[in-house]
Length: 279
Image (cartoon, rainbow, N blue to C red; front, top):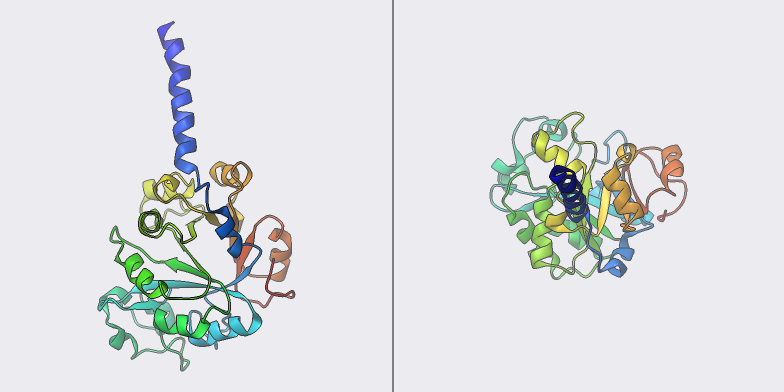
């Protein structure tokens, strides 16, 4: 009889703990509204053949010209310069297997993006280009426990006059903003990270997949791969707490039309949407 009494209590505790872990931030919903019903050009409005390369000044200028929000990736160089670049190495975009974090900005300037004249831009130069013309969705690359990238980004963004929000796969980036810059809208990036397992390992991939680390950063929105949303934690955030959801990465007009009513904002690349800048 004692066991029959204990089991429901244990289940109730686990149930409450689960809800506590996946819960988003429940305040500042008004501020998050600035970033919903937008189309965000993934890494700028780059061309499919990369003649206008992703995460380049030309791609960002093209996105501004079309009135799209801009999604971009930032990471630190060896000399602590913030650059806009997605991959951890230069292999795919520059044809040489060198880690970005082990190179200075001056060294990076020796290489061009996909054999174009474009080079890896500094984050501060991108901010000068955008000047608040379109909203920014800034993905913070944080491969380790160190959060200096967040601090470096914040130092540049404190005087930026435009609208921006941050997102990351690493909940520690959100935690940094929760602690130091509560006013900044922040989002948790995720997907089905256990198929295949990411380089972070199964446990961490599982926890991020099911949004079980939301308690660390209490995100204002969830950016989830649109094909992976059959996930109870994602659905609870969307339906129970009305957490804004962003779809990534949509690569055709047909897919955009299918999912535009299912997400609050869309991150796209590989085509120019037939309608204007809003979802």
